[in-house]
Length: 265
Image (cartoon, rainbow, N blue to C red; front, side, top):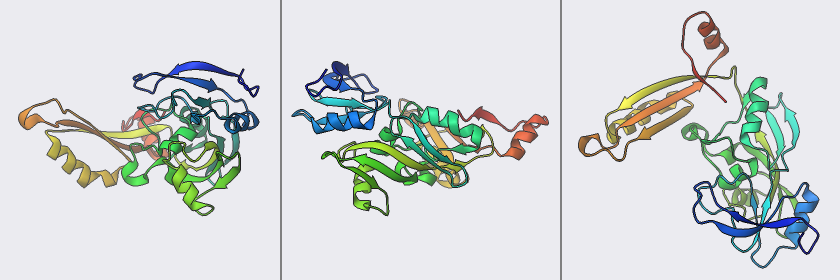
């Protein structure tokens, strides 16, 4: 137990790359009241929020200080299918939201390469996905945030309401406070399937030209680029692009006209 009665323990933490481990005092608050107490009694090294620990570096470690693990704050507060809005606790993982939303014909507009990321972490890092050329970063689809500021105040912020604080929080790596919950705008989809096109590019110039000329036709685009190849083969690539399959495309697949690949989960 910490000095203020909040359960805490020393723990060695790393980021996703598992490099540069550091020791911090970790608290796992089960509710906002406990989290607020931990923030109000922060040690000299301060506190930082942590989700599922998938940051590439040490963004959620805070060596010698306190770390608040927010994964218990994962409740779904409201799902508005008519308005395409979801209000959810900051500790919810994107994987859990995918399982909730896809059967209901909805999807998150921006999803990074792993679903093992929390909503709070996605906002704090303003993560991008394979739809960045069309949809921008994660925070572009956040309608509003409930934030616990360092002085213990709970504030609702959005583009229109306290816009400067919203902008500083989106991609702010937790420096404005702890994200408690968020309301997300959703994308409507007709199936859990994807239509995928795969091309091979001979070098870096070729793959860049293909992306520049063709990415606008797809929602998702990613290239695997060989930077170890030498000479004229440097940058040879596999370019993968796709979109959510429509109901008609799924029906055509069932009728023996294969067009689909890769389920969305």
